[in-house]
Image (cartoon, rainbow, N blue to C red; front, side, top):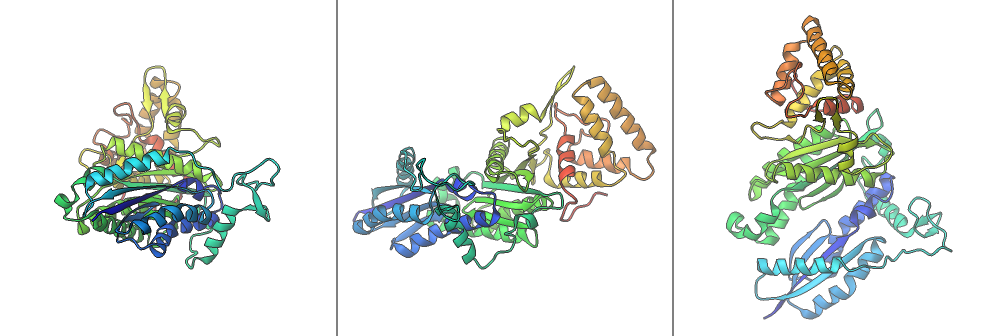
Amino acid sequence: MSKYLYGASVQGIQDFIFKTNKLQEIVGASEIVKNISTLFQEKYKADEIILNAAGNIKAIFNSKEECERVVLEFSKMIQQYAYGITISQAVIKIGDAVAQDDINKLEKNLRIQRNKPSIALDMSLNIMKLNPSTAKPAISNDKDIATSQKIEAYQKIENKTNSDLHKLSNSKNKIAVIHIDGNGLGKLIPNLKKECNLTLSEFSKKLDEATKKAFEDAKGDKKIRDIILGGDDVTVICDADDVLAFTKEFLENFEQETKKSFKRLTACAGIAYSNEKYPFHYAVSLAETLCGVAKTQSNRESSCLMFHNIQSSNFQSWEKFIGHELTIKNDKRTIRCDFGPYYLNETEKSLIKDFIVLLESMRIKESPSSKLRTWLSELYKSDTNAKNILDRIDKMADENKNYSKERLNKNFKALDSRLELNNLIIDNKTPIYDILQVLSITTAFKGEHNDS
């Protein structure tokens, strides 16, 4: 008997959630997106749900009529439920059991559907009054339909903790947007039965549970709010002081939880530090790009993170950040200031825990951090003068009785065995920019560390 494999892919989730800089609306939009999976389960009688997380749905229907009803109704229902979101659907006929070739064919059909343009339900005409924040047609009190839906969804949620952006930022009004994505799923899923002895449906459920458990355990009492949390896809907003501790703990927990459930998986993270008033959609875009850079650098095999502090008011691509802010060209050489990625556990790599220890040892009052700012500034002008400044810093550290140069060099060498106070550039890269940037926007690391 023929069965029908149905697939749905929701587009525009990031734009829908981060259309505004008001955290309550962002949280409300996040709740709406989470409820899409619940609506599907409640409304339709699928014989087996293979995947239902983060805007991706795959289900098997024995009944052709029920599958046709889903295709006819579901897209319209979701677009009306969340104005600004669009959805692609595809169906293929399968045999008694779903095979990997069936999944591949369905994904191909979904990609074709995604490339077809769709008309937004909240499109505007020039004669319409617009919401000044979103440029969408206003329906009442200058709010558009999507904004009203988000506010209504926010008002219905019970847990409103960490839903005030001002309270979520640190004392310097800095927040961090984190995007985390699992590694190697594309290679694992075709071999699930062999490697994990699981069906795709069982694997999807266990992965979702592992991700949520990893998040809750890492969250603790930190100032953090999840925005997207499903499957291996995580996007959260966090106090800038908490972000390194949270990300490190999440990556550790994710590896442990997936190992318990089926097989140890790794993940990569991108962190965008910004002012609390900076447009979220730009920060999210940068966090996703940094996550992709970390994946590329680690060959999608190891857990690691990349971060960047957005200083300019105008958003730039990561490539432009590298060219404008993270590359030093002086009279002798070119030096990169993006020292990462920083790894969770990897031999002969710079580790997150060692970066944190070094960072905190530079936060101490008698540390040479301010002098290193002078060195970094001079490095843009003259390589020779910068070397002379560094030699003086090194000599002054010998004479400083209130601060241990030996301890500092120990921390430098933990990050990379070739680093020390009088040698801060290796492979034409330096970690000093990363350290000074985090120092300037945070007050103290929150978590266990040892800088002795």
